[in-house]
Length: 516
Image 1: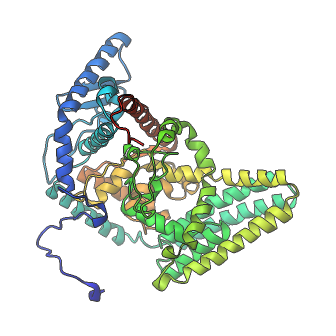
Image 2: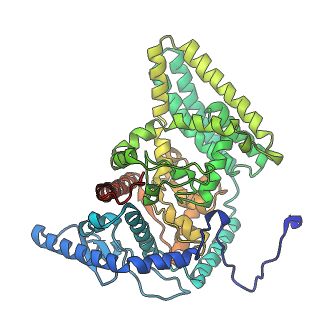
Image 3: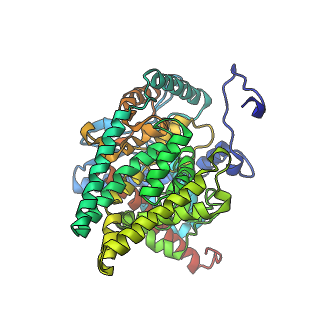
């Protein structure tokens, strides 16, 4: 690697992150832009917060003591649960490196609607205000972005990493995968037995459960978390993903690696680029251009304005049929020349195409065409087997859809960004096999190559790390996590409804003819 070195880092001075060229804009740096936005909207936000607190206070006097109360201290709106007391208020925290005054957390964007007049806002102004307000929420909830604080977090993260290595938590215990293999074999045997005796829908259900469980190991292999050997783990992953499930491991790694680098960034993370069907950020309202999909624009038009408010109701049905979209993305990835694997990975592309052809021969021809007698039953078999996998898609989105999508700039440390954009799911240890390690998504984002069977052990170390640095480690139960996702989808839907009012005013007054 020395042949590729372009310079040396002065270890006596703290490292300062720079903005990648793909994210750079013409003009001042990101921090300057963020400061300008805060100053520009400060008066409007303060007035809105004062009036919102006043209105809620009046509402409390009429309806009695609520479950949640709102306080305004002259800077921002803080919502606290009276049931749990002050512990339910998340204030800005300081690391031992920097002592600063705690800042109450503002309410969501929708808390401002009662005091904002859509007749006074253009579409662009509202989007900018919503993005700015969500940045304010993150700045209030998390440690300061100043260099001293972030360098302290970086230093403690390195110590945490050393503890993980010293505890041998990167080492894989293959006995755990032997247990996994037994479970996969049992599910496949049940599928095959039910098919033999022509219980087709029962067979389809077991096939779906087999796909759901075995893909957890493909995820491990994609991260080289099993043997830590590229060839061996790639073969394991390709066999499972391409041959057993008909999905391209190469496509998944291409998408998933970007997701890990720029988690929950609307313009860069393909895992949240589902607009207009599912929008988790007001940034999508401006028709963003995806850097992952080669500049493809996720247009936000009048149709999106009517689809988005319904997304909290369509979320589960979409998750039920999400697997069909993965087939399409897999083949698009493999058939595009610019996505061909190079170097030591050159062999993976033809191997994947061969294994996926085998999958469709076995599933499409041998199973659906030859083993199932009628078209009606074939369609039912496909639907049941694919819809059964919908918990996997919920597990994938659960840890990110309700979390922050704001970009706080290059000064934010890796550990802070991962914990700010990722949530864990709480479950008893005996239930870990159902979630397949995805319940430790925040831990996994900090240490992607730690085998999933060791993530519960790493969790204890990460909790201590968060207590030490002031970072928030968010963990909810599965039901509470689903409620959190639906709440976020509903919040963005309410923002779209307000946006439609702003746009309607613009259209009626013929001020912005080029809105679409």
